[in-house]
Length: 167
Image (cartoon, rainbow, N blue to C red; front, side):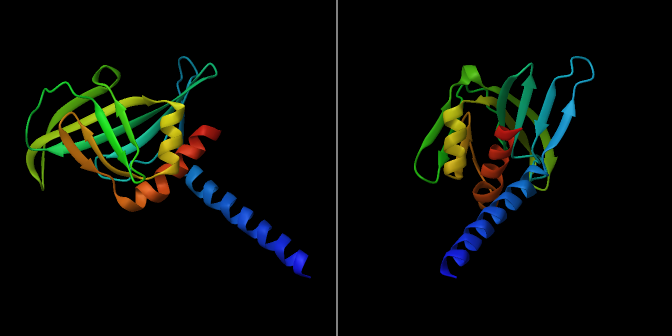
């Protein structure tokens, strides 16, 4: 009896884990390029401007996962710094300026007029491992700081990355 209960419990935990993972994987969208048939997978933006999201480019079996970070600031900067990400466990991910595509656009809204800075960069395997194992706490694009929404950083982003790896 005790052995069957333990087996059932292990099955239940495994099944729940698979269902949770499927829940997040079902939120990922897929687009196939009509010209070269390459596939792009992209996660929801979880925010009005898409503060953090991920994309996977699958081109002729050459898989690459990218991350996009955004931050709003009222100041204009043409500083040539890259991206820094601080994780909950104290680890850091630093992407040098040369490896980051940084754009800015003038926006106006409830926060007033300012600039929306966006960084788009390729994640290495060790970066993906870090992002799966520990939530994002803070990040910086150039000189402007952003903060991840805690519930997304803890639950959504690691699961999205796990799903993107499997696709």
